[in-house]
Image (cartoon, rainbow, N blue to C red; front, side):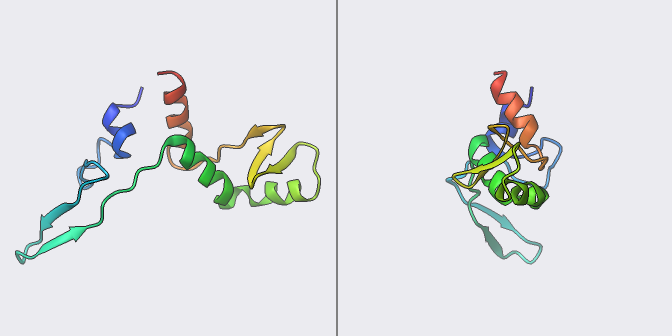
Amino acid sequence: MLPREVLEYSVHPDDSKVPMMDHRDSWEKSNPNGNATLIAPVTTMTTVERIIASNQTHASLGEFREMARNGHEKWTLQAGMLLREGKLMVPDEEDLRVRLLDEVHR
């Protein structure tokens, strides 16, 4: 199972360069010159929101979208989402499939 901080903050636990922070907060970091740089707040999306957004935009699904538009029996478009045999297609993007499985098995 993925650690809670990974699910909540979308941060890989081995990535020490990314601050783990609440998406409502800002994070200030001093650079070597002593000036403060403000980094925009992180906007987190739920796993379902990420899957839907990726389903609608991921380049790897372009061929299947075209098949759906051409009336292929296995592929359809419904409300802009690509379905295969009536099931939402989850593209192989970053950690989406792992996150989905982790949420389902919690």
